[in-house]
Length: 212
Image (cartoon, rainbow, N blue to C red; front, side, top):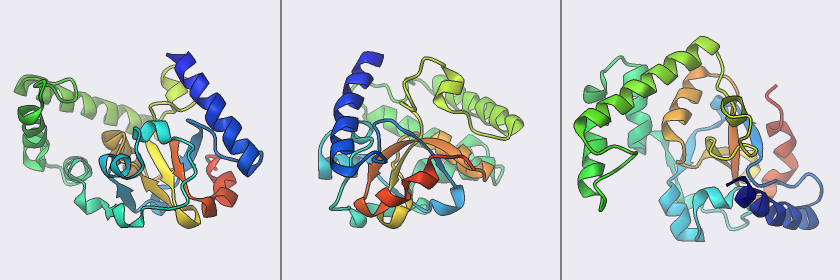
């Protein structure tokens, strides 16, 4: 699996370095995002429909024709809103809308499986697990990097995916929703896998490369 990512990085990193110089974005590069600066998201499916390919495979891709029309406020994102309703407002997962949301996804899934869940019991267990993860993150006071969790993980592959839009604005990609909701609640810089980057943000990448 690591070889796949290494090969992808070889081509993306090499192309970006030749075209944009030594400070160009790298595939699956770890960046640090300040929650107060992130206010919008682009639905992953919308971006892949527009640009083609899978959203995580676009990591490090420089996109000149930025899809500003696809950006949405967090209030439009069902997973983020039910996470914050649960962890901020104290609603249980049913009241927050999470249970019905996931059961609805399972009902229309061709395989009958969504997020590795098939039954209501598995759905409840999934959200109980998220609560345990959230309690652990709060106790540590920071969000772990992917290599904190697995030292063999390649760069920040699989992390919260965040695009860097025009002017250096971080924009959530829609990949890693529950973890993103937790990271935002911590109100501290969190590690993320870099997504697409607008050319005007290239000169600002250095400030995303440090947690300070």
